[in-house]
Structures are given as C-alpha cells and as structure tokens.
Amino acid sequence: MFTIVAGTGYTGLRVLERLPAADAVGLSRSPVETSRVCHLCDFDTLEMLPLELPDRYRVLYTCPPGGEDDDRLRRFLALLLPAPVRFVYISTTGVYGDCKGAVVTEESPVNPGNRMSKPRVTAERLLMQWAEENGCELIVLRSPGIYGPGRLGVERLEAGDAYLNEADAHPGNRIHVDDLATCCLAALSEEAPAGVYNVGDGDHRSATQFAEEVARQAGLRAPRTISWAEAQKVFSPMRLAFLSASRVVDTTKMRGVLGVNPRTPEEGIRDSFS
Image (cartoon, rainbow, N blue to C red; front, side, top):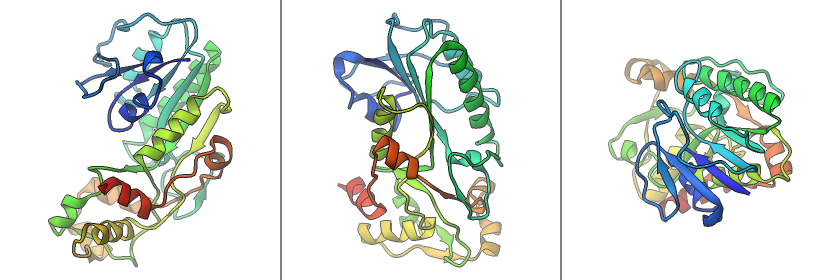
C-alpha cells in the first residue's frame, strides 16, 4: 500500500528507505540526502499536500508537536482527504509521567509531568477522535529515548561531563533507532491490530550504566559520577526533570503482537559504532 512518511528525520528517513521505493514518499521540512522521493514542505504553513492522495494509503507521522494544542498536526490532518486507511503516530513514554520506578503498561493512566510530554497526550487524544470519525485505523507507538549512530553521548563522555552515581540513578528506557524503525514498519502492516503500543528494548539499566557501556566500547574513561545533591547545582532544569522521572516500561505487547525483538544495549551500541 502507498505510504506517506511525514517527517523524515532521524527515524522517519530510516523507515522511508526500507519501504518499496515505488510506493512511498517522504515529506520533510528540511532537505535530506536520500534516493527516495521526498517533498519539501513546512508543516506549520502547509495549505495543500505536494501530491495527490490515492484512495487507499497509510501514514507514518514522526513530527514533534507544534505547540500545546499541536496545531501542526491539526493542519496536517485537515489535508488528508480522503483519510488514510491507517495512521501510525510516534509518541513518547513520557506521557506516563513520574511513576516512582513502577512498571507501566499500555493500560496505565497517562500523567504527563512536563511541557514536552503534555502536547503528546493532546496529540494522542486528537488522533483517537479524528481516527474514529474518519474510519481510520490508528496505532500509537509510545517510544522512550532513541539512540543510534551519532546519538550515543560520546561527546559528553569525551568532555568529562558528570552523570548521576548509581545510588541516585533511576531505571532507564530506550530503543535503538533501527529497532524503532522496525516497529514502525510492523505497525504500518494491516496485520497489526490498531491501538497503543509501548516500544523499547526491555533493558532498564540507568543512564549512567548505559554511558559506562558506551565508554567501554569507545575505549574511553568511565564517566565521572556525582550525587543528586551535586547534580541539582550543575545540571540544566531540563536534564534534572528528565532524570527525576522514573518508570519501567513494559514492552510485552510490542514483542507479542508486533513481533519485534529489539537488540540489547551492548548490541545496539556496537552497531551504532559500526
């Protein structure tokens, strides 16, 4: 089925390049290096799509929210006439908020605790209503932190930046970008039931432990660690907010229904370097 990848950034471009070239097109705000068809468009001022929509098609939407009410998404949805058969949206596990280290499943209530997560909840609810009104199958992929080539924090390690000591660190959740792309492809398939899916590698080591493994594979010195009290003096408010929220994201549904078994952090870091 014809596929539109709206947003061809770090994840979207990988999905686009794994789809059949004749049956997929990308929409991008900035130029990208790819052999695939990719139209430039500004999602914040878009008044018409740069292509004619077929009767049956599907959409992968990877764009970040455009404001608290996500006017960017609202504008895009208004142009989808006819509506797609299937719409896949990449959200965030941040919608669960701070759960004090508790396990969260797709049935757990959302409780976004910061300005980055709240618009995602708005977008999810907007899409659920729009999909129901338009007879469109909706899949929401709630993703944790995405890592991969160029996104391992090597520069931070080389600069000697501090990390929380393990006694103060919380469980982490993350996924390699190519595994997230695999989740997107599985979700685009008509065989995948509509609904919400948590995605992640199922490995909940802390950000400090992850950095230690990156340093080991990169041949760098282990990261310098500090206490939470010290971190409050030197970390940015955004980093403190991120580190203070704690949850363990259950990905049983992803593995059982989407059939995706992500690589381990050791494998993902190794693949990112290679």
